[in-house]
Length: 172
Image (cartoon, rainbow, N blue to C red; front, side, top):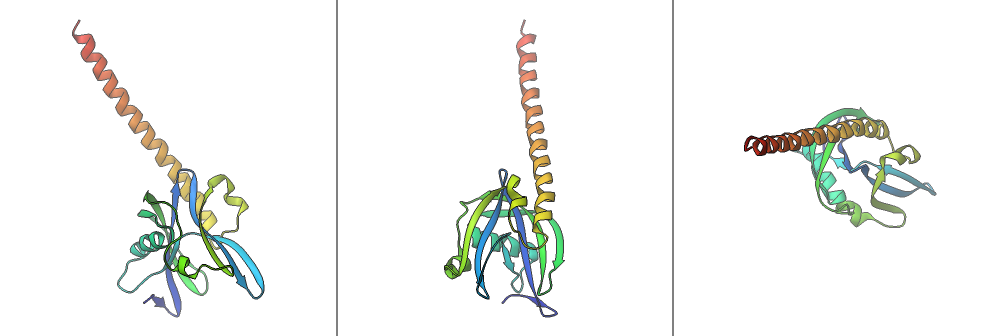
């Protein structure tokens, strides 16, 4: 049973990167005779007795077959018919593939597809809500974490090599 608060559906979404790509769901949906085309961040309804973080992890796994962990709480967005809890997720494993309800409901008038969109193309696609802004903010953090990890690893290797060189030189 999905949670509602003051008549609004409660949902959770996790922004997740795989290399320089953002994990998204591409949608084609027929509405009032018009075919809408847009992208969403994986996520969905929070179930009773489930935390917002747990819902984001579960929904990402169900929709994309990718396992993630939540790194950071981002924002809470009231978008009219619902309230969305946004998170920044870290990709752990899995091959991005459509799964869950979306796979079952997939048809020509309500099409779902898991995609990886390069961050350079983020301004060229239609993303609903505050997703685009949050993707850009998370990507800055993602890249800074990458370089921080790289430099820490580099320093460790340098120290090991320096130590090894010191030991070799001390034998002479």
